[in-house]
Each structure stands twice: as C-alpha cells, then as structure tokens.
Image (spheres, rainbow, N blue to C red):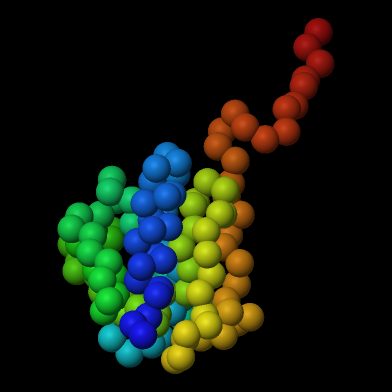
Length: 132
C-alpha cells in the first residue's frame, strides 16, 4: 500500500484550518531530499508554518509537501519528503499528530512534543496591582 502519511497530513491540515488555527509541521531537516532554509534548523529539525497566510502554492502529495515562502524576506521553494514529516499540529493548542510508524520513518519516541503555545498578550493568569 502507499504511505498513509500524506493523506493524514492533508486531512489534519484542513481540520486545523477549519478550526481557525495555524497548522505547523515539524520536519526532520537531516534527511535526504529536504529543502528548507538551513538558517532556521535547530537540532536537525525545523517547524514550518503552512497556513495560507504564510505560504503560497501548498501541495501535499504522495512524494511530500511543497510550497513557496519567504524566510527573512528571501523567497524560497520548500520541499519536504513524506518520510521527513514528523508531526503536524495546531500552533494555538498543540493538537495534531506525531508520525513515525511507517517503514523508513523516524521512531516517534525520538520526536519531541510540539512546543507549548505562548499565551497571547492579555491572556494567561490575571494580575492585580494595588493602586493608592
């Protein structure tokens, strides 16, 4: 059978967008064929915002994920082979899916959890000040 990962990535991307959230993809940038801006790679991984407001020409197919975007103002064509997609999740709440069970895929135990979203200004714990 063909890999299920591109179908799941496509479906989860739509689900995240339908819920007015921002889809992020965690990528193993050390695998062959990955074309991402190396200046933004940390510990062999990169997180990519694939929302329609951030990128152009998103294509998710059996080969992988591709799009055009600007990084630091410099345009770049990005390509991520299917096996290099480690996770897709919503920036706002971390909901999504971690991959790793298909042949040739990294072990899911080696994938760190998505970073916790930072509360927007005005959210979080309320604070009070005594004013005299």
